[in-house]
Length: 387
Image (cartoon, rainbow, N blue to C red; front, side):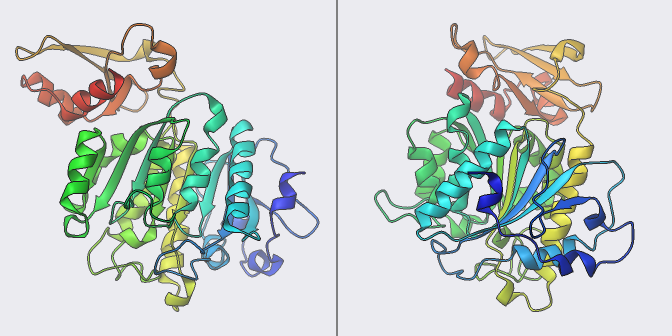
């Protein structure tokens, strides 16, 4: 069975409706009837998933085709990038059939060093994406952008609002870290917040994100998978989801987070979920998702081959001694991007398991925190997970 067997081709008129040599569709390898694109040299493979049967309160979130109307019309980014649009994975006979198809497709793309770029579909499909990493023999980091934390009671049926249970409890367990960006405190139970803190997971409240989005960049840079619930964007900027509310991320911040994801040398898959085209008559949400995809793709063209792709040998090294701790904090600054990392030691004999995680992305402000004789929270949380 080939990858082509999992996809329905793109309506040719979607591309032909967009005129001009500078339009994005001119650069894409688009799956048209009888002409599945070659993946040789391709960096990103875009595809939709028309599956919503686990969606709580957002039935009809099958909007990839609508997004393409706006995506294809955008102008090209500056640098060349080989991108394929593979079409849509249709809902299987059972939901488990869809999960199996998504897992297999993502697994094959990851083996080819091609980044899956998913337009859902409900957000529980993140679990199928996650299971594609099962045979890579490495632990992974997951970042969700969501106004809620999608955990539920143990033993409850699997839905889009508790899919994180499946990921955290999956065996074998290869999740190293989870971060959520943009949750709204009044929508999340206090006990769940406390549980996340006990597990040393990273949570960024909406107010923190909107006041200084730069502080979220290290978390995104450290991710292998980013899962974006479009409901986390405020209704005025993205009305195309039944879960959208009066508060949320600004549209431009959604694009900035997508750009951060694209720029990360570590990230290998990206998905946008919960778009419901029937609630989006003017196409505002579809247009925003198209712009997010554009920013993600442009971000990839701006990658600097920093850690873990490049070596830290050429980085500028800074050593900070804390009077309040026996630990010596080591920071690195990349000469290519001016971005910062901190070196967190792992136990002897655990190098192979944790080598990808001991050099942790951070901000310059966290380096300043250390120079002021204070332990950065990110360093301490990572140290607890490593030990």
